[in-house]
Image (tube, rainbow over all chains, first blue to last red; front, side, top):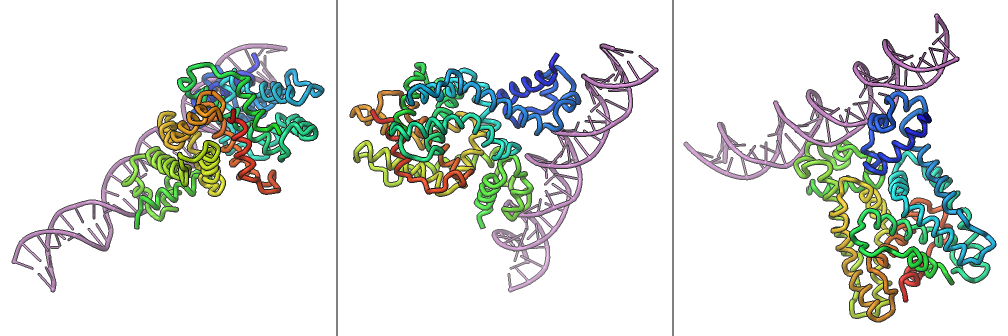
Length: 187
Length: 187
DNA sequence: TACAACTGAATGAACATTCACTCAAACTAA
DNA sequence: TTAGTTTGAGTGAATGTTCATTCAGTTGTA
């Protein structure tokens, strides 16, 4: 009986399925099983709704990334756990992948909010990189570069697998992907 | 006096500046210095206009990537030339970066057209990867993975530098970025 | 009854597209 | 040459559509 939940779920499904442009409030209402006006009892505007969705998704991602992440493990182990979690979050639930993609291109979401949300995910990543550099296991480069390159390659590979599965006839090994990322950043 | 040219240029500027959503035909017409109706003498629909822009941009990118690319050089040299060209195309002309970003999220551009356009760019990349694997210099993995990961990381890093310059107080060395990519794919 | 939650038709704004019109250049016939 | 005629690029107000948002009315519940 949680209408707010229904509305957020419906919005997720529709944005992931049709794209942000092609999901009018009327359609969201229909999928959520309520009238269009009801949405406005829970969200002031459509922009508000999209923002709430983005915030929720970011939190989910942050939580996923830190599952089983143990800061007392060795650097390589931490790297594989953290980015493996991230990759699976995108890859096992393609809806997440598409949502992040769509919402990232949405002008309603300010760069500030985007950073703030992403920072939750990548904050632990900063410490990981710093520790790795201190142990001379990771290239001595700005964290922003190390993180962005890893993030970008995993994001793109999961996107492409999702959008063009034909191009990957044999399943792609997560280990192999993470090893490529590790090779890129390791000293 | 080339109206078509003017219209394409105006569209590029506006999409890069305001985003695809925020550039109505009326605004494009104004910037191109013509009436709204005139655009329809050159492009059947707005979608058509956007498609033409995307095709043109893809061709530019393909041409850029192959500048000074010599297939008789060694693998590492070819890798650095090819992907260095790609990175500079994005990085030196942020408009290109933003345009690719905006147009990639546009549902009007079919996955098919996108691949076709991208393939022009990355076709030479396939041979590069195959040659590299034959010489045991590059990891024995599907080309699609090797290319997508490299493409993704360079794309993301140039995007982030463009959108959030504050996060990169010191200039980022192109050599360092390419070395990271090379380390990721090398055997 | 009162009150909150809910509904979906109605409203108005934004926008792609159309089309009746303008006018300068090209062409023709004298 | 020149007056008359045709052509078609160019124009922008008008049209029709798509939506976000509102609100008068309905339903369910205490």
